[in-house]
Amino acid sequence: MLLTRASEYALLSLNAIRKSDKPIGAEQLAIELNIPKSFLAKILQSLAKADILESRRGASGGFFLSKEISQISINSIIQAAEGKAPAVFNCFELADTCPSGTVGTCAIFPFLTNFQRKIDDFLDGLMLSDILP
Image 1: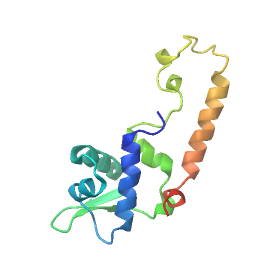
Image 2 (image 1 turned 135 degrees about the horizontal axis):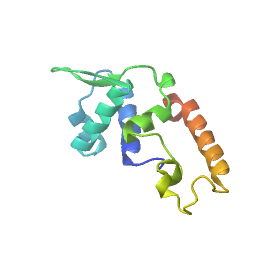
Image 3 (image 1 turned 30 degrees about the vertical axis):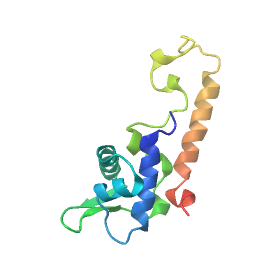
Image 4 (image 1 turned 180 degrees about the horizontal axis):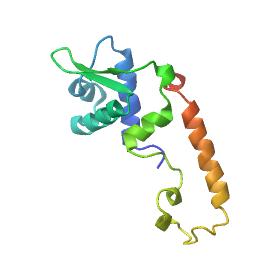
């Protein structure tokens, strides 16, 4: 479950927002990006709750970045959009999802843990400025 539509839409929205010289509303973004408005609104609120976006009410209101794109990690965007940390393997989400049923004695768990740590470190170090032109 590394990236779902929520993460994709969050990244596309952040790109559109950063290019704008004024705050952009959810409805305008939904039309511009061809994303269902209700789904996008939830993602934008999650990004605002995570201090990635700020919102302004009123006629000239909408969403705008709360910090520079060089200070926003891809991991923080994914976590905000998905509502949880990205996990490459299901066994990291719930112990009862272990495909082999050998929680605690799994021979490959150390490898999986190390691999997940490398993914987490990579996503923490990858900033929005690294992926946007």
